[in-house]
Amino acid sequence: MDEENVEFPAAQTEDDTINNYFVTAHYADQALEEFFNYLKSSGLYEDSIIVMYGDHYGISDMRNPELAPLVGEDPEEWNQYHDTQMQRVPLIMHVPGVGNGEVSDTYSGQVDMLPTLMHLLGMETDGYLFMGQDILSEEHDNTVPLRNGRVVTPEYTFFEQEIYDTESGEALQDQFTGEELEELYRYRDEAREELSHSNEILMKDLLRFYNPEPLDGLKEIDYLYRDQLDILEEHPRKETSLIEQYYGESSMELYETDAPELEESERDPSYGGSNPPGRPE
Image (tube, rainbow, N blue to C red; front, side, top):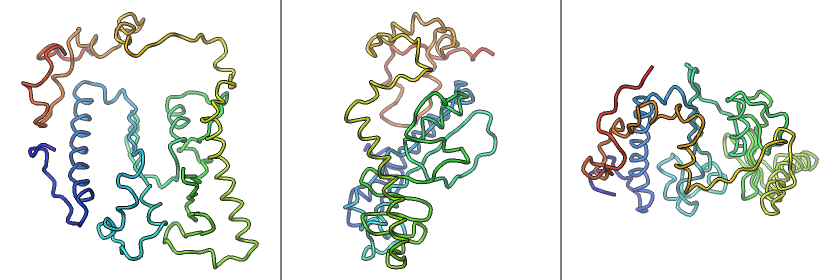
Protein backbone atom coordinates (compact mmCIF):
# COMPACT_ATOMS: atom_id res chain seq x y z
CA MET A 1 0.00 0.00 0.00
CA ASP A 2 1.03 3.58 -0.62
CA GLU A 3 2.53 4.99 2.57
CA GLU A 4 -0.02 7.80 2.53
CA ASN A 5 -2.78 5.18 2.83
CA VAL A 6 -1.32 3.63 5.98
CA GLU A 7 -3.09 5.50 8.77
CA PHE A 8 -3.83 2.63 11.13
CA PRO A 9 -1.27 0.79 13.28
CA ALA A 10 -0.40 -2.76 12.31
CA ALA A 11 -0.96 -5.51 14.86
CA GLN A 12 2.07 -6.83 16.70
CA THR A 13 2.22 -10.59 16.09
CA GLU A 14 4.75 -12.93 14.47
CA ASP A 15 2.63 -13.05 11.28
CA ASP A 16 2.90 -10.12 8.86
CA THR A 17 -0.32 -11.11 7.09
CA ILE A 18 -2.30 -10.74 10.31
CA ASN A 19 -0.49 -7.54 11.24
CA ASN A 20 -1.30 -5.85 7.93
CA TYR A 21 -4.84 -7.19 7.76
CA PHE A 22 -5.93 -4.48 10.19
CA VAL A 23 -4.20 -1.80 8.11
CA THR A 24 -6.01 -2.86 4.94
CA ALA A 25 -9.32 -3.32 6.77
CA HIS A 26 -9.07 0.28 7.95
CA TYR A 27 -8.39 1.38 4.36
CA ALA A 28 -11.51 -0.49 3.24
CA ASP A 29 -13.55 1.22 5.99
CA GLN A 30 -12.40 4.63 4.74
CA ALA A 31 -13.32 3.73 1.16
CA LEU A 32 -16.79 2.66 2.28
CA GLU A 33 -17.25 5.95 4.12
CA GLU A 34 -16.33 7.84 0.96
CA PHE A 35 -18.77 5.73 -1.05
CA PHE A 36 -21.62 6.41 1.38
CA ASN A 37 -20.84 10.14 1.37
CA TYR A 38 -21.04 10.08 -2.44
CA LEU A 39 -24.39 8.26 -2.37
CA LYS A 40 -25.75 10.93 -0.04
CA SER A 41 -24.40 13.91 -1.99
CA SER A 42 -25.67 12.52 -5.31
CA GLY A 43 -29.14 11.81 -3.92
CA LEU A 44 -28.89 8.04 -4.34
CA TYR A 45 -28.69 7.12 -0.67
CA GLU A 46 -32.38 7.36 0.20
CA ASP A 47 -33.37 5.64 -3.05
CA SER A 48 -31.17 2.60 -2.49
CA ILE A 49 -31.26 -0.66 -0.61
CA ILE A 50 -27.62 -1.23 0.23
CA VAL A 51 -26.33 -4.65 1.24
CA MET A 52 -22.81 -5.28 2.47
CA TYR A 53 -21.53 -8.65 3.57
CA GLY A 54 -18.29 -10.50 4.17
CA ASP A 55 -17.95 -13.27 1.60
CA HIS A 56 -15.97 -15.48 4.00
CA TYR A 57 -13.32 -15.28 6.71
CA GLY A 58 -10.57 -12.76 5.97
CA ILE A 59 -7.65 -14.81 7.28
CA SER A 60 -7.06 -18.51 6.60
CA ASP A 61 -7.46 -21.06 9.40
CA MET A 62 -3.74 -21.84 9.44
CA ARG A 63 -3.04 -18.32 10.74
CA ASN A 64 -5.71 -18.32 13.44
CA PRO A 65 -3.45 -19.39 16.36
CA GLU A 66 -1.40 -16.21 15.79
CA LEU A 67 -4.64 -14.22 15.67
CA ALA A 68 -6.02 -15.83 18.86
CA PRO A 69 -4.63 -13.33 21.44
CA LEU A 70 -6.09 -10.43 19.47
CA VAL A 71 -9.60 -11.86 19.87
CA GLY A 72 -9.14 -12.83 23.51
CA GLU A 73 -8.37 -16.53 23.00
CA ASP A 74 -5.51 -18.78 24.07
CA PRO A 75 -3.49 -20.08 21.06
CA GLU A 76 -2.88 -23.36 22.90
CA GLU A 77 -6.63 -23.98 23.23
CA TRP A 78 -7.56 -22.94 19.69
CA ASN A 79 -9.50 -25.68 17.87
CA GLN A 80 -11.98 -26.32 15.07
CA TYR A 81 -14.76 -24.67 17.07
CA HIS A 82 -12.82 -21.39 17.04
CA ASP A 83 -12.07 -21.79 13.32
CA THR A 84 -15.80 -22.04 12.67
CA GLN A 85 -16.54 -18.98 14.81
CA MET A 86 -14.15 -17.01 12.59
CA GLN A 87 -16.49 -17.68 9.65
CA ARG A 88 -19.11 -15.41 11.19
CA VAL A 89 -19.16 -12.47 8.81
CA PRO A 90 -21.08 -9.17 8.84
CA LEU A 91 -24.28 -8.66 6.88
CA ILE A 92 -25.39 -5.03 6.87
CA MET A 93 -28.55 -3.78 5.17
CA HIS A 94 -29.65 -0.18 4.72
CA VAL A 95 -33.31 0.12 3.77
CA PRO A 96 -34.87 3.51 2.89
CA GLY A 97 -37.55 4.57 5.32
CA VAL A 98 -36.28 2.44 8.20
CA GLY A 99 -35.22 4.99 10.78
CA ASN A 100 -34.23 2.87 13.75
CA GLY A 101 -31.40 0.49 13.02
CA GLU A 102 -30.90 -2.66 15.04
CA VAL A 103 -28.47 -5.54 15.41
CA SER A 104 -29.97 -8.98 14.88
CA ASP A 105 -28.48 -12.24 16.14
CA THR A 106 -30.23 -14.30 13.46
CA TYR A 107 -28.17 -17.20 12.15
CA SER A 108 -28.19 -17.18 8.37
CA GLY A 109 -26.19 -17.90 5.24
CA GLN A 110 -25.62 -16.29 1.87
CA VAL A 111 -28.47 -18.31 0.33
CA ASP A 112 -30.88 -16.35 2.54
CA MET A 113 -30.05 -13.01 0.96
CA LEU A 114 -32.09 -13.37 -2.25
CA PRO A 115 -35.52 -14.09 -0.69
CA THR A 116 -34.85 -11.43 1.96
CA LEU A 117 -34.12 -8.77 -0.66
CA MET A 118 -37.11 -9.77 -2.79
CA HIS A 119 -39.44 -9.34 0.18
CA LEU A 120 -37.88 -5.97 1.05
CA LEU A 121 -38.60 -4.91 -2.54
CA GLY A 122 -42.23 -6.01 -2.18
CA MET A 123 -41.92 -8.94 -4.56
CA GLU A 124 -44.08 -12.03 -4.13
CA THR A 125 -42.02 -15.20 -3.87
CA ASP A 126 -44.70 -17.90 -3.54
CA GLY A 127 -44.17 -18.95 -7.15
CA TYR A 128 -40.46 -19.69 -6.71
CA LEU A 129 -38.30 -22.26 -4.98
CA PHE A 130 -35.41 -21.08 -2.81
CA MET A 131 -32.56 -22.77 -1.01
CA GLY A 132 -32.67 -19.93 1.51
CA GLN A 133 -35.28 -18.18 3.64
CA ASP A 134 -36.20 -14.61 4.48
CA ILE A 135 -33.82 -13.58 7.26
CA LEU A 136 -36.37 -11.09 8.64
CA SER A 137 -39.18 -13.64 8.85
CA GLU A 138 -40.25 -14.93 12.26
CA GLU A 139 -40.28 -18.40 10.67
CA HIS A 140 -36.63 -18.22 9.59
CA ASP A 141 -34.74 -21.43 10.43
CA ASN A 142 -31.55 -20.50 12.30
CA THR A 143 -29.59 -23.47 10.97
CA VAL A 144 -26.53 -22.84 8.80
CA PRO A 145 -24.75 -25.65 6.91
CA LEU A 146 -21.22 -24.64 5.90
CA ARG A 147 -19.42 -25.73 2.75
CA ASN A 148 -17.08 -27.98 4.74
CA GLY A 149 -20.00 -29.98 6.19
CA ARG A 150 -20.06 -28.26 9.55
CA VAL A 151 -23.46 -27.13 10.83
CA VAL A 152 -24.09 -24.20 13.17
CA THR A 153 -27.22 -23.38 15.15
CA PRO A 154 -27.71 -20.97 18.07
CA GLU A 155 -27.42 -23.97 20.44
CA TYR A 156 -24.98 -26.36 18.80
CA THR A 157 -22.02 -26.41 16.43
CA PHE A 158 -21.59 -29.78 14.67
CA PHE A 159 -18.44 -31.25 13.17
CA GLU A 160 -18.16 -34.93 12.27
CA GLN A 161 -19.14 -36.69 15.49
CA GLU A 162 -18.31 -33.78 17.76
CA ILE A 163 -20.83 -31.31 19.13
CA TYR A 164 -19.93 -27.98 20.76
CA ASP A 165 -22.01 -25.47 22.66
CA THR A 166 -22.21 -22.58 20.18
CA GLU A 167 -22.20 -19.96 22.93
CA SER A 168 -19.37 -21.26 25.13
CA GLY A 169 -17.37 -23.58 22.87
CA GLU A 170 -17.66 -26.45 25.39
CA ALA A 171 -17.53 -29.98 23.89
CA LEU A 172 -20.89 -31.64 24.62
CA GLN A 173 -21.02 -35.05 22.92
CA ASP A 174 -20.11 -36.92 26.13
CA GLN A 175 -23.02 -35.29 27.97
CA PHE A 176 -25.78 -36.83 25.84
CA THR A 177 -27.36 -40.25 25.93
CA GLY A 178 -27.09 -42.45 22.85
CA GLU A 179 -30.69 -41.67 21.94
CA GLU A 180 -30.13 -37.92 22.30
CA LEU A 181 -27.00 -38.11 20.14
CA GLU A 182 -28.89 -40.01 17.46
CA GLU A 183 -31.54 -37.30 17.37
CA LEU A 184 -28.95 -34.52 17.18
CA TYR A 185 -27.02 -36.28 14.41
CA ARG A 186 -30.27 -36.67 12.47
CA TYR A 187 -30.81 -32.93 12.77
CA ARG A 188 -27.23 -32.31 11.60
CA ASP A 189 -27.66 -34.63 8.61
CA GLU A 190 -30.88 -32.89 7.52
CA ALA A 191 -28.98 -29.60 7.36
CA ARG A 192 -26.18 -31.26 5.39
CA GLU A 193 -28.76 -32.63 2.97
CA GLU A 194 -29.73 -29.07 2.07
CA LEU A 195 -26.12 -28.48 1.11
CA SER A 196 -26.09 -31.61 -1.05
CA HIS A 197 -29.24 -30.38 -2.86
CA SER A 198 -27.48 -27.08 -3.56
CA ASN A 199 -24.45 -28.96 -4.91
CA GLU A 200 -26.62 -31.11 -7.17
CA ILE A 201 -28.32 -28.04 -8.62
CA LEU A 202 -25.00 -26.34 -9.30
CA MET A 203 -22.96 -29.29 -10.52
CA LYS A 204 -25.65 -30.80 -12.75
CA ASP A 205 -27.19 -27.52 -13.95
CA LEU A 206 -30.63 -28.62 -12.77
CA LEU A 207 -32.06 -25.10 -13.13
CA ARG A 208 -32.48 -25.77 -16.84
CA PHE A 209 -35.46 -27.97 -15.86
CA TYR A 210 -36.98 -25.33 -13.58
CA ASN A 211 -39.74 -23.24 -15.16
CA PRO A 212 -41.80 -21.50 -12.46
CA GLU A 213 -45.09 -19.89 -13.46
CA PRO A 214 -43.93 -16.29 -12.87
CA LEU A 215 -41.39 -16.75 -15.68
CA ASP A 216 -44.00 -17.97 -18.20
CA GLY A 217 -44.36 -15.61 -21.12
CA LEU A 218 -41.01 -13.90 -20.58
CA LYS A 219 -38.78 -13.82 -23.59
CA GLU A 220 -35.09 -14.47 -23.39
CA ILE A 221 -33.07 -11.40 -24.40
CA ASP A 222 -29.63 -11.14 -25.85
CA TYR A 223 -27.52 -9.07 -23.48
CA LEU A 224 -23.78 -8.68 -23.67
CA TYR A 225 -22.10 -6.69 -20.92
CA ARG A 226 -19.62 -5.23 -23.37
CA ASP A 227 -22.59 -3.58 -25.15
CA GLN A 228 -24.36 -2.37 -22.03
CA LEU A 229 -23.74 1.36 -22.59
CA ASP A 230 -25.34 1.16 -26.03
CA ILE A 231 -28.26 -0.76 -24.57
CA LEU A 232 -28.75 1.78 -21.76
CA GLU A 233 -28.73 4.63 -24.29
CA GLU A 234 -31.88 3.13 -25.80
CA HIS A 235 -33.53 2.16 -22.52
CA PRO A 236 -37.16 3.36 -22.26
CA ARG A 237 -36.52 4.67 -18.71
CA LYS A 238 -33.27 6.40 -19.54
CA GLU A 239 -34.49 9.64 -17.99
CA THR A 240 -34.44 8.06 -14.53
CA SER A 241 -30.67 7.50 -14.68
CA LEU A 242 -28.43 9.63 -12.49
CA ILE A 243 -26.52 11.17 -15.37
CA GLU A 244 -29.77 12.26 -17.05
CA GLN A 245 -30.90 13.87 -13.81
CA TYR A 246 -27.63 15.84 -13.87
CA TYR A 247 -28.40 17.05 -17.41
CA GLY A 248 -25.86 14.74 -19.02
CA GLU A 249 -23.03 15.65 -16.64
CA SER A 250 -21.21 13.01 -14.63
CA SER A 251 -21.67 13.03 -10.86
CA MET A 252 -18.08 11.89 -10.42
CA GLU A 253 -16.97 15.23 -9.05
CA LEU A 254 -19.26 14.70 -6.07
CA TYR A 255 -17.03 11.82 -4.97
CA GLU A 256 -14.58 13.22 -2.44
CA THR A 257 -11.48 11.27 -1.47
CA ASP A 258 -8.09 11.80 0.10
CA ALA A 259 -6.65 8.63 -1.44
CA PRO A 260 -3.36 9.56 -3.20
CA GLU A 261 -4.07 7.10 -6.03
CA LEU A 262 -7.25 9.03 -6.90
CA GLU A 263 -5.88 12.55 -6.92
CA GLU A 264 -7.55 15.03 -9.26
CA SER A 265 -4.66 15.07 -11.72
CA GLU A 266 -4.95 11.31 -12.22
CA ARG A 267 -8.67 11.22 -12.93
CA ASP A 268 -9.82 10.25 -16.38
CA PRO A 269 -11.13 13.45 -18.00
CA SER A 270 -13.41 11.43 -20.27
CA TYR A 271 -15.82 10.98 -17.39
CA GLY A 272 -17.25 14.41 -17.88
CA GLY A 273 -17.95 17.74 -16.30
CA SER A 274 -16.45 19.68 -13.48
CA ASN A 275 -19.21 21.02 -11.27
CA PRO A 276 -22.51 19.39 -12.19
CA PRO A 277 -25.65 21.41 -11.47
CA GLY A 278 -27.75 20.64 -8.45
CA ARG A 279 -29.87 17.54 -8.65
CA PRO A 280 -33.38 18.46 -9.84
CA GLU A 281 -36.25 18.00 -7.42
